[in-house]
Image 1 (cartoon, rainbow, N blue to C red):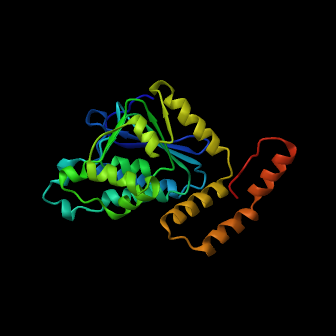
Image 2 (tube, rainbow, N blue to C red):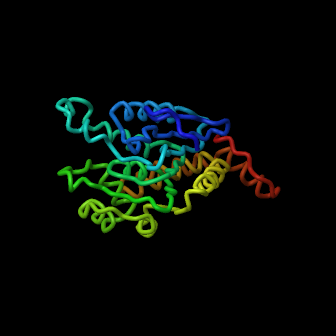
Image 3 (tube, rainbow, N blue to C red):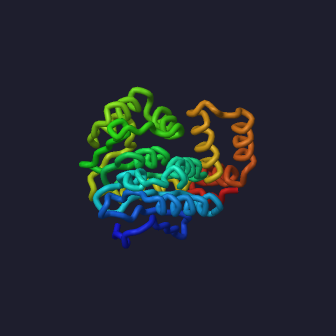
Length: 259
């Protein structure tokens, strides 16, 4: 993928409803400034209101996915007055997005960027990348929803390893830890991500969106059985289900409309 000019993240949406957000500070390993978080929040809000959206891919420019929040801004005197939970709210908004999300990890992942990747439903990484959560080496206590995501996605033992040791973890170990769903050579990253995009874009949107939300709620232990039943009933009465059954009987690809 071609690199864009350095600056805030850029959003593109194709005719199939596949969105791509690209982090755009490659000279600084795509570190996130406050203006980047504001841009991401606006982009995610726009996507959340788009009924034609089917999939989101989050990726970076250059040789790294993201280096996390810009520590120089963390040190600024007015940091406490300038949306101190801005990073947390951005990642929470990404996790809450209704459609399936894929982190296209074009390189290494550091600090808060790990939580950005964990907030996605799938993570595809490349050989040679690494991950490091330096909070303990900086004197930081991580924010609550991020800790919860680490534990629910990776398990307590893996979360403790990443947070309490603050050591770099290489790509092959990230696959074993469950952080990566797939590890590929850089030359085939695009095709690997595209395969997942094509699969997700061809499935029933109502079922995907409902089950994504329900699975995340179950993982956090905060699910409401009535809401799960409501989503189940909505899909059972949907035109998507009728189309899926008709396509199965006719041995043809389904054409879902998300209703």
